[in-house]
Length: 340
Ligand code: G3I
Image (cartoon, rainbow, N blue to C red):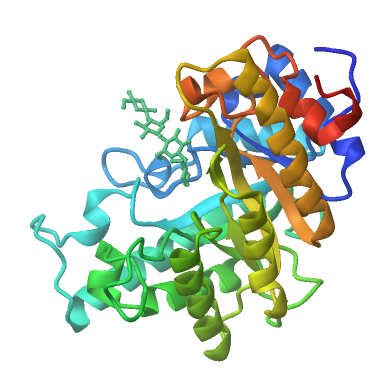
């Protein structure tokens, strides 16, 4: 692990990274602890990760490794995610015969109960790591992930998921209601002192159409009294993403009574990747973090520790390379004067 300034020491905002258990040991763990304040479980808090083949809830070994790592090293955990259209067991949306749950009162009741049980069980297991807001590493949770539609054809702007088919827009409010009961039971109000900040999270919020639908949804939730603390901007970006659009996204939601976070940042390059592009990417990261520093954010998280561990590995989107060495992106964030 290189002798360079920790990124977290150069930022006022908590700096996070998505990891799995591979980054909780050896040199990757040293790199995480040197540069980051916070982790997000990249895959192992997702709904399907919590169930065995017999539909029994059980903490998975990856989740245990991540929570142990966070507790032992005093690292914050941003939970991801309680409700998602993907990576959810098929049986959530089926009756006992394996047929799709109907969108009638019976189907609604069954799915509502499953969602409630799921959230309660996740929270109950996490609570074994200490009181929320009093020693537990969990500081935030993506309650719902990617519920906004990619295209404008429906007036509500919501994704046509199985949750939507059965419960309609209510599925979002129900998830927040259950998460509030499970994580913030003695802290019913929104505001600064809630122990676990409850987020809605989505991608492409820097793009105009998606941003309009996302904003309208959060407005409706707030007008219905849903206790949503935060809006997450994933920010899966590329070198052609206009930098001003990042500012635009964060400005757009600034008038709402919510905090904001950058939850899944990465910046892809065109393939084949060249050294010149890697350098340009350093300047992109510099400009992005200039904007992030100008906003009051809950945290900024990069979606992976090294390029080789990224879901978009071929496009080298992250801050450290496969040898755990700092790329120009590191200098863009932490030390722009030493950009090549
Ligand atoms: O662990 C299994 C392994 O047992 C199995 O043999 C193998 C065969 O496919 O799959 C492995 O699971 C894969 C998992 O990553 C862990 O590596 C899944 O197939 C694969 O779909 C999964 O991809 C993840 C993806 O979400 C889908 O859950 C990516 O790692 C993860 O970076 C990505 O993250 C998402 C965020 O959650 C939400 N926002 C977008 C972001 C990028 O897609």
